[in-house]
Length: 455
Ligand SMILES: [Mg+2]
Image (cartoon, rainbow, N blue to C red; front, side, top):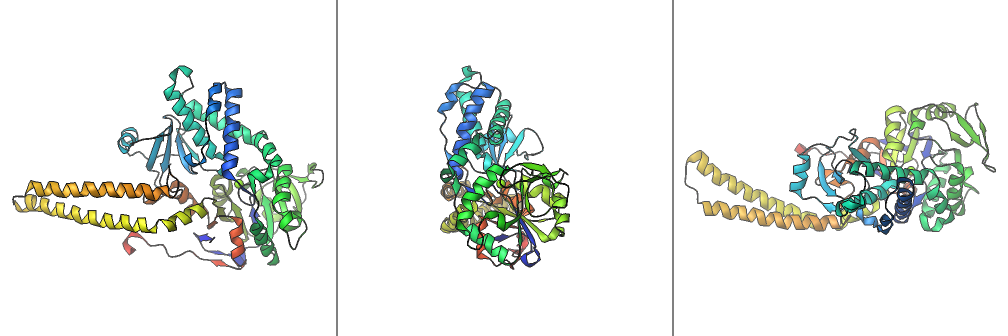
């Protein structure tokens, strides 16, 4: 797969590359992992929050959600939002709201993500979240006698349940025991890392996972595919675990040194050297490694945790791994004919609308009599075209996600997620393996972006 460029990035100037681990260096079978999160979160809701046991009957369907959706906690709705924070698709629970219902409720309102009513679900790890919340909304509506809490409280309870599964080791313990089920093996990613080392790029890991989990995953995904090294610790100059990103990029926390054999830790006040650490912060790492901020590239998958804060405070260059991209690009290619047909029909529609405007001009501006039947006939044609276009758009979107369409687009505009990718990532790709296709000396340059008046 290709690497896509938002801003100029000259790899010759990059001396160190930091990698996030989960969903970046290490890829997950997301369908399996989200399914696990979904069912474990249900258990937490029942045990910790007193939800009725019948929610154990919920069935997980990975296709019912995509990344980048926004939860409207007050109304029990899930929203797909564009670059301009406009709502493009909305469901109440799992039921799609018609355009009329949507307008009646939101009246063209922009979604203000700083408003606690709205919650953006943008990590790879939280797709089970929207799915579970929408099923709870359905259940509350269909069975009022169950006395489920208000929507807003249910949304917070789901957040609690998903978070606690991630934090208390519930998910990690199961993943480590079933690595082949949850973790993707990707020899090409290891090839990419060794190629970078040949050009003396210094490689770092900065992960929020703990050392034990990090070691288990890297032993499994990297060691078997190394050609020039014996162990992943030889590849990485520094490995920082429990980094608490995004705070790692903004706050000053102490570094602890981790013993790779025992996992035991001790305080570490000296300049950072090769090895495994816990905690710490970005500016000390950069200073001790004697690098300028623009000589460091950081690769992650989470916009908020990995690149948004970093971009605002640190000045390191940024890259995002977006696992959906592969499917998205394939679907984009396979729908070319449909797109062309939609464009043709839109041209036809515009021509008829022009005819209608001319008929009105005859009457309004020149006082001529206009045959009303002719006007109605033209409106009829527009309506028929709208139906055809609507059907084609549904077919088009079905090539992406059958319920939500494209991840990176909301209608004709980029989706909120896509706009954040454009804003915060210098380059983006489907997986670390894509780096293997490019020389570590590559000069990444964006294409000239056409504005409306240039097209
Ligand atoms: Mg990650």
